[in-house]
Amino acid sequence: MKKLISLILVAVMAVSMLSVSAFAEEQSFKIAIVQQLDHPSLDEIRIACDARLKELAEEKGFSVEVKDFHGQNDNTVLNQIGAQVVDDGYDAIIPIATLAAICMATATEETQTPVIYAAISDPESSGLTGISNVTGTSDALNTPFIMDMIFAAQPDVKTVGLLYSNSETNSLTPIAQAKEYLDEKGIAYVEKTGNTTDEILTAAASLVGRCDVVFTPTDNVVMAAESAVAEILNEAGIAHYTGADSFVACGAFTTCGVNYTELGAYTAEMAVDILLGGEIPEFKVMDGGIITVNTETAETLGIDYSVFSEMANTVVEVVTSAE
Image 1: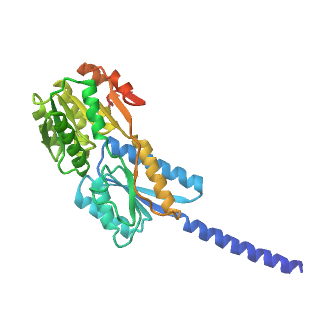
Image 2: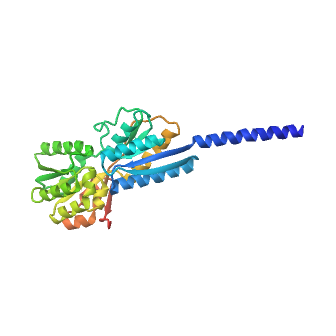
Image 3: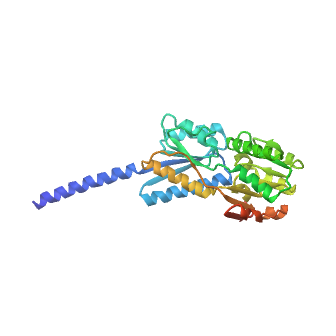
């Protein structure tokens, strides 16, 4: 009898071990993070997303393999990455920035692999809504508020420069909003665009002497050149109002936007919830309202930004990054 009971216990333990093994296998995920190009804002998102994915794996008891891919801001390269991660059987893809998200959405049309994008300023205009396997986080810019900041800090501004890349979908809506705002107030503006670093630097230089301040939204092409852009504008005494704090860390004057570390972490949380069986939700617009000021630039330009404390609950002061 004892021998029979022992045999039964061994059998039960064996079945239990098989069940645990199967469960562990089911709870092992491969996640691809596809970064459109390298610059501080997108780097910050990637780092935060990667860290939060690993934290959640430990907290919730699953294993995760996270691999980073870099698209070099090139449509062909991003499409190749999309094909590769689909062929390699990744369980989810987290593209960072608009072009990367569009390419990953296209790559997963047949497999319906979950795509959880990060930092898409205008998902609707980018064609990233109404797709069953696609969602993510938006860093939609409050353009009228940044325009308000310009005239609160520098009420004598007569002409605003609009510096952006016309190849950046992220920039189209906020630039249109800026024009509408300025038209309503009867303020002149001048537009300059470029699609490469050299073109952006030429555009920035051409604004000198033609405007009092410059506005750039969350434009990845301009951001990649921002350290040099800021040098051009600061030397000319022109304040650069921008769409993200990474611009400010590179020498721009100020921004009001989202915290990209929080955005990256939230994107990771969305991805894990989906992988663990949750439904794919609507995209999430992250809360903004954080004004960031470069104090060195403010001193160089002679701008008193104390009025910003009356406009926002949080004003963060930074200096230009040494990198």
